[in-house]
Length: 209
Image (cartoon, rainbow, N blue to C red; front, side):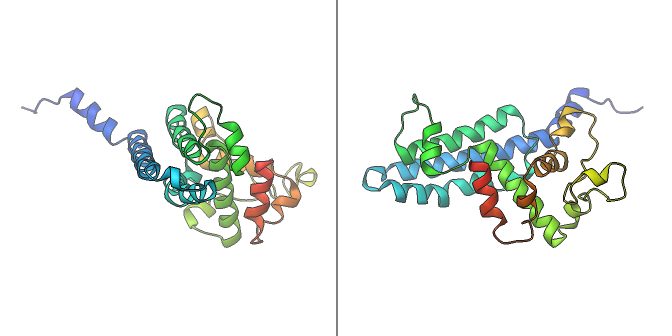
């Protein structure tokens, strides 16, 4: 006689092993580390000049938000908002702006990109590095420029990437599709710098503008 299988247990196990659950855990851990770092920094806020506060936030808070951010284009709206709140809290610590006031001017004053824009910047940096160095293979093997002998290719730039076909909105937010679209929207002169060490600086200025 075969043993009875608890379907609820199977569903639970499937949920806990799903990529969404693992991503949620990663985001939660990153958010907790951000707020823990900010809690320690707030004890000394009044004796730190703004430039020092910004330097400390860049060193102790932002790395938790930036780790793997280039591959998180398909992060859900809820999890993206959680990361945005971490970054907003860090900027409020730097500038002293109340949580009831608009935070956008603080980003302008500090010359920083908001979280979604910063995530796109990091994704493009990763893509440019992959194109330049040809690795890691699991990324490079899925990136390629439009072939010059393809139909209509003569009217397109030789630096334009092929965009993988995606049937669903979820897949359209996946790294290879989303980042390829971002890349193709960049100015051609900026794309041409991807083999240059100054690419990141020019890209940041472009996205900040």
